Image (tube, rainbow, N blue to C red):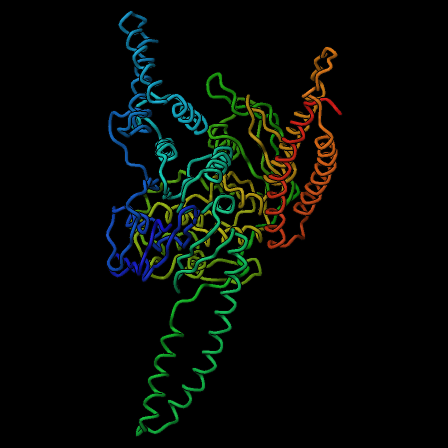
Length: 631
């Protein structure tokens, strides 16, 4: 059943062409990711599909008998609306019953009078009549997972990130047949993202989404549509499959372009040497030459290349943190944290939203003063700090290229060569036209990217990055990852992008309750695997320690004993679980290896994720059978 059909859509703003002749379709049950570089119109395309913008040409058809819900990248709010009203912005009977019940309950809690008791009783009867209890329970679970538990709070009192979560909760509860989502993981911490992955993977819905979160994309979507300079490409598979097939396409494209160049050189020689008076046959050859020239002038995807700036020499002392404490009022954020950084270390910081990740970075760069303890940098250390909230109005009225040249006219690369500031900008997606754009005309994402490049231009040997991947397209993320892989100094990164973290860091700091910071050697995936293993062991131990109930002797068949078939299954499960756990341990060791290739890393990450799902299923069945007495 076809839900969406797009035919030859094109859109341009002034002279800027966003996309041209885009065509694709989405069938019921498909979960599709739309990816492209920043500025190529992903959000505009979604807005056109939702009737919020108009295409210059082409058409699209959305099936008329389905319900569609849209999560925009920016959530516009309405004044004086509570979180509950914003989430339940619908007139159906279930939603009306829930809103009336929540209001009656709130009034009853503030004033327990006979009138309020009667109002609450009527609201509860309406909940029964419309079978709204389960729906309310689901709504509160979603709001809890997204850390939105103050239902009566006015939505305009929330931060931008919290408002985006409200919009997300609203469409997850919409019971829509077709979800269209623009960057759904923005402003979510890792635990929330992993919960949303599970929700969308198991939901019986059709999905089209724009996302730069590659782990999320790989887990949720089974198909990828790429908008590229040379057309629209569709890949029926996960992200790893997309990477493999895209590389094949680019290789074939490069080989074809080389063939065309060879032909062009021969035809150019003929054009220069042939007399002006030509036959009809020669005229045809001239037309073919002009066509060939057009083909060679068409834009092609840029090749990946090693690209890293020269870093300053690093001495023996890097950074020492001694018994660091910091609190907001009576709430501890960092408690008795000590660590000595070593040369070349690559550390990640993970934790829930509000757990103190950014606070730790601000303490290290001396933007905040600790309550106790001290932080000491080595004399040779030059820090580069990227803050996710950086706003610099002083750059208004300046062009991008001029802002960069204020920091460096030339950039010295790791090999010693010098390149111009313009070439440096172009490598990271600031084409020559964009370089002469004024700062105030840049998008938020472009400003953040420019801010990051200015940090890199300082030639630091200790980079401290706070959510550097926000609002970057996948191509830019790959460029940034490649750049940082060749960076020879120390890295300290806060990011909710698990793919980015796994590729770059060799151990993580975990922000825990009470200001405690746990140090784990390995990347985020290693830590998650270890945590899940510990949880399984604890669950098994709890079952073992639970005393078995003494049952009276009876001649009736004991239904709480394992059957012969179940006994054989139980024995086999113990063997399979042990084998899977050993396999997971070996995969973790391989992933932690320094000489593993990016391709093998991606493949092994996917393999261990698949094994983890199998292990969870088998462990749950083992626990179920372990509750029964042996045969």
